[in-house]
Image 1: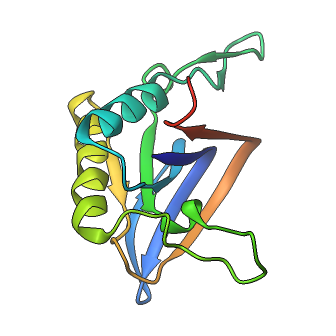
Image 2 (image 1 turned 30 degrees about the vertical axis):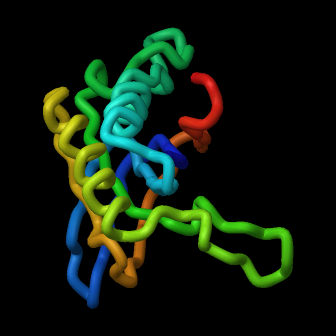
Length: 148
């Protein structure tokens, strides 16, 4: 799995002109699923993201995690994180097919909820407009194929 995690003051996702999900302070997570991913991978990545200490403490050091600041997550499915950009027109055959990706996207969000977080989300495969006010900006790339 691949994730782009952005620390935000607030974020929202709109589908067909209607706000589908929105959060205040927290993480905007763009989440891509690969063909070799499993439920274990989804849970491992969820735990990593929920434990990231990228919020500032009283000394302006990144030392606080999502729980410590009362943050939420907005999770957006993003198959384009698996884009093959070897040519000018990206290919997306490296992303998991929906029959695998959807349950793992759901498992990722379920794990975050199990940990006590509010999780808002987009709609898998929908055309979405994502709006956010980045805080920092702080953006972290995570890939379960690389050690973390």
